[in-house]
Length: 152
Ligand SMILES: [Zn+2]
Image (tube, rainbow, N blue to C red; front, top):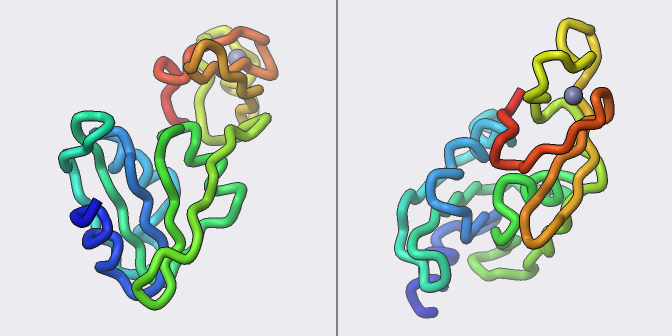
């Protein structure tokens, strides 16, 4: 715990996304355009984690994720924690809830799907089954495990 607290205290104001599964940090940086704010971003890869072996962590100064973004984050890192930092202290921890639907972020793996070739945004219904996230395509109605669906 003391170590965890120290890493969180490193920024004055902003957001710390902790307990990202090791290897997902880069995808999250890209998907949430965290470098586009022009704020200081600190990323740790493969840090030791008591619960999951290793983890990634992202710290962003002066940026706060809204609830929609936090829920989108749940699709990449369901067990991540989003800490809101103010004046070097954790003032809130956002609970992540899977969104009901997700548009544009993912690409349907079905090559026959009507979402390809058309100027339409992908759209999936999100479900959790036996602890894993499943995405059902709005267009072809096929269901895929989250891990098998690539980003758009
Ligand atoms: Zn589809």
